Image (tube, rainbow, N blue to C red; front, side, top):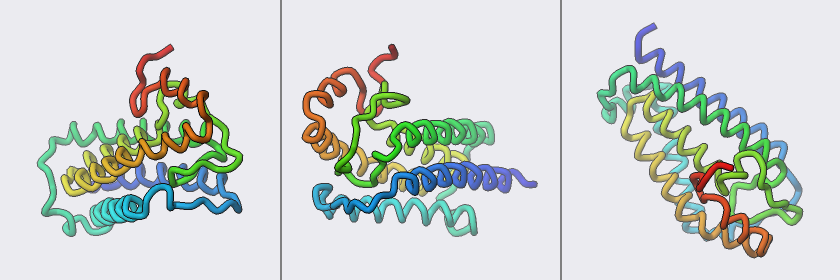
Length: 197
């Protein structure tokens, strides 16, 4: 197997494992409750979906027909690309830990479910939005494995939009959980742990 085929196989493995975990927990969190996207803002919601489509397209282009994104290749040494495997493994573990901790509270918008509970265990003990850290690791992994700046830029765009959306999400969580969430904010970091206890 050639070097690039190895990295494509590793990319596909990281991608499929992570997607499988995500799909499983999204199916587990399904409910008949209709959740409005209006509070998120339609412009941001549409921009985030288009950025996600851009990222998926670039990634699938690399996996299915590498010359389609070959013009955006980076001359990364193999050892740096191999870091993508380690980061990908970490992101898959963190995705499992995050989503299994979140359980039925999982949504893909800023609005909480009617019967939502405040999760403060698992990775939520230290970080209020560990799924976004997970997404950053996953996208970094894929960009390194593919050695492709287009995938990296697409991932950065998705992460930027998620960061822009986060204050709105937190405002909804404060409205839902009140002082309990404010206290939680005081002891945890938004995307990165403040301290370990």
